Image 1 (cartoon, rainbow, N blue to C red):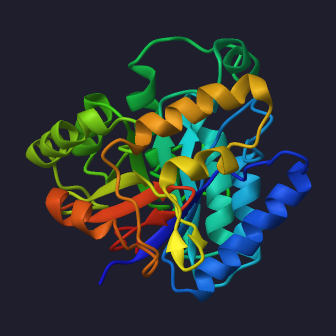
Image 2 (image 1 turned 180 degrees about the vertical axis):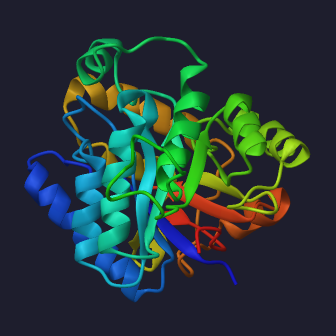
Length: 301
């Protein structure tokens, strides 16, 4: 049986406000929980008028506080924007408030433009080696403190919040494999690299305390709508999703169209109709999609 999850950016649609967007996200999470969905993840983006999920940990707390059983997490936290200690304290606090319900997905892209990145973390550097070091440091803060450890995340230490590596290239696949972490591949906007990334991750995977076998989540673009008992073609739904300022709408619509190439489109039968053939052909352990997601299994438990 396939389990389903949601990846949410808290979109601020044309004519609405951030407050309304965040309330809509909570409403969707509550419905997802009632419908038996497994996870509800929030994505970090900055300086985008149409997205209200910039304070990702705060939004996760909002969603977790308004639900009771569904796993809630980040899909993901863009680690270059943050000091690992701060992330450990934030997610350690969330895990203390909502035990066994919090996931922490980590990405290495800033989720914004270069100028905004500098404003977020003023000492930001383009060194690709910073991300693996930051992931290991964050793992360290979430484990039980070692004897003589001077810096301890409180809350955070000993919570062992499940960490995922997010990626759209071979770099993320190799890092997730090396650290023995579950890997979430963004095939909704990098479909061409999907098969190679999954194969590399599985080939290079090293067991860890968190995970003994490789575990893959695929991001899928999933657009559904029922009109007169039938689903509309996905291309006709894109403008309804990206009701944002004109300066960003054209670029995002084009990106959405690229991401839909080769993606499943449902027939309106069941949550995930149309996704199953792709899932079977790629044989991932888990699936998730932008705006409406699909997930099977739960390596975080």
